[in-house]
Length: 281
Length: 97
Image (cartoon, rainbow over all chains, first blue to last red; front, side, top):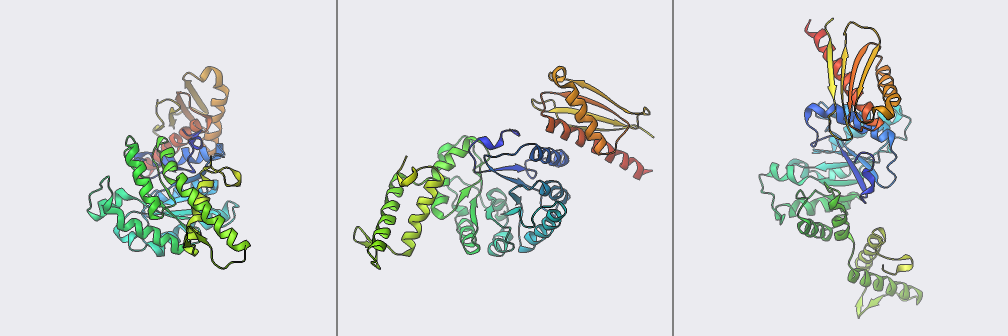
């Protein structure tokens, strides 16, 4: 797994030093991940490392060992305020300069997993230009709330909407929490589709077999691509005719409709769902 | 000085279980290797142990490696972790005195 972590089709691979590692093995995991980052280039996926929070006895050493290896992203758990990001930002800057890296080159994905953190989403997302995405952790969040975690996930509707809103204001991506039942492919697909419709840009997974399911949920359907292509074509035709208004099937295409269509096409291109020149596979 | 020990890793596939003893009373580094890859990679394994200990400025140690097909970077990580744990144990004894 260590040597070929990037071959399962995930856009980003996360090495975990936090909750998956028992307290007695924190040192071993940190050294092992550091050596793996030194030894392998992982060309097929973006690399992220989930470190321990700086408020724990392990956080600082995690940063000291991992940041010099220049992973694309540090995933910072248990973020509750903008200060949590600023403290990490400052430490990362020191380490980057010491290691000869461009300051700011390693990004941060804050993970919000408490009620207090959820009350500061926008401040957290806007705290530093390093913040590349907002992620929330559903298990810890529902535990903090005293809510039951259900398959339907209605207990998370509110926070999910707020994560997306804060991410859009800050101009960063919104990433959904993991779906823990690795055997429930249908449940995962439904949840991934639901969060895509809420505006999320992606979803964390915990097993290679979940990668394809999430990708398929985030890949626009043929119908969506069809419609988006017709919207964009109508816009181009109106522009060529120097007409101020584009119309499709008798309905005016306004700016939000055009923006949604372009997002659908960008998503389907990213997922390889269209051929060059706009045709579908 | 009493002997201190640090251990790291597992006997699972693609891993290695490493034990590092410090302050055994003998000089230099002795390494005992055991596992399915030793016959093919003994020299590389000995180098990995020696280089890792040398980076930690350890010159006297007794190291036991039971490998189960660990990659070079994994073996080095296990040796470093075991050695650091032994150093921390030695420091702990020093503090208690």
